[in-house]
Image 1 (cartoon, one colour):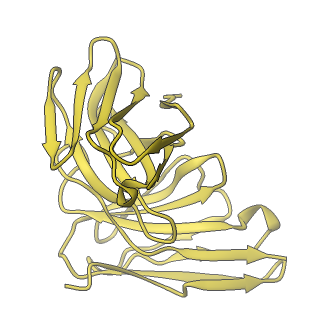
Image 2 (cartoon, each protein chain N blue to C red):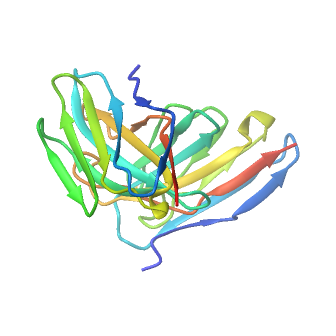
Length: 114
Length: 112
């Protein structure tokens, strides 16, 4: 199993550009999550999904969109990039609800918006 | 808004020292507590998931305890090694929310 994979690993965007961060897991996990990690702030949940076709907002959803058309994929879309979205983005997945099951994290995408 | 606090923020110890750090959280509406180990330039890896008051879990030289009534969890590392150097994150799921609230972590540096 490859686990959770994310692409790209690094990206620089100009203000106002759009991009999609890809996340794929091959563990047949129902639950998937997107976090951002800012220095000194810990991981903040952006969006999550409990299964294909179902998504919900986390703590910091503004400026992002997600979709979950398949169990494996959970892309994160930035429509109009802003400097405040400079961060490291982590995708994660778990088989069942978090209380019962650990989360598996991808390697992260480092995004800089200039 | 749930707040998860970890202390200390950072810790420097010598190889062979035993150490521990704390995760504090609101005791009301507790569902589960997670501990993750996060090495620089890698992604977080799960250490423990704890759900019951009084839980104690162990993995090699690392162990954790949980007190849901008073709202804290301790992580212990016995005989620290340089490879234990990492940030240790705790995360709370408060209630059946499907959401983890992460603390800011304790950065452990073990010097040979």
